[in-house]
Amino acid sequence: QSVLTQPSSASGTPGQRVTISCSGSNSNVRINTVNWYQHLPGAAPKLLIFSNDMRPSGVPDRFSGSKSGTSASLAISGLLSEDEADYYCSTWDDSLNGVVFGGGTKLTVL
Amino acid sequence: EVQLLESGGGLVQPGGSLRLSCAASGFTYNINAMSWVRQAPGKGLEWVSGISESGDATYYADSVKDRFTISRDNSKKMLYLQMNSLRVEDTALYYCAKVIWFGELTATFTYFFDHWGQGTLVTVSS
Image 1 (tube, rainbow over the protein chains, first blue to last red):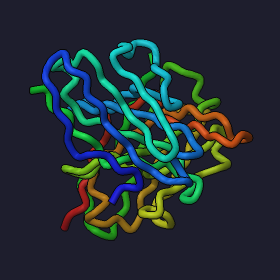
Image 2 (cartoon, chains in turn brown, purple):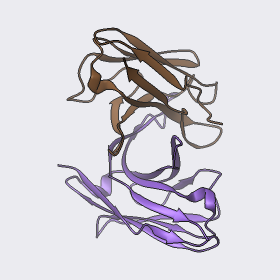
Image 3 (cartoon, rainbow over the protein chains, first blue to last red):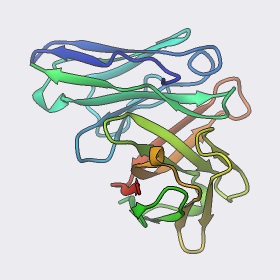
């Protein structure tokens, strides 16, 4: 059971906008910033969003993040077939004194 | 270009030990914290351990505390994970990751992994 809760799956058609939620608690999401990673099969995970809503250089602006209270979201607009991957949210947990991840969301582009 | 190259994975029996290594290049190693993250077969990402820039502060997930030890050699730009008393559930692909963190003295802490290695596979089985 992961500390952060994500839907196990999400889907959309090319060009659509999809959102993936991440629910945490007062010891993690509420007080610390949330990050998002994209993980393609056979590849290393890739940082997509850090500090709730910041994109590293090279990440398209189709990807955006937000946070409110104990929940965070990743939005992907203009969905492409290459976006089909697993997506994970993550943050620091003050009670556990360590990093926590969501269980991951498998995004399917129909 | 940042590169992280893990090694040391393999097949080990339950109760055995293994030492993972991660060779870092392409960045100023001694001013970056580092971490290990793993992914068991068919499961999600799980943070294992982290270490500060100088190595004087270490952090562990409860699942590996008292069995795993993280360390680093800044002169060699190397990160290590000594894994003892291995269990079947430790079977996973282990990633080395470069850490960016800030906000320790504020109410909001930011800690994330901006670069990852390709991973080394650890299989614990009899």
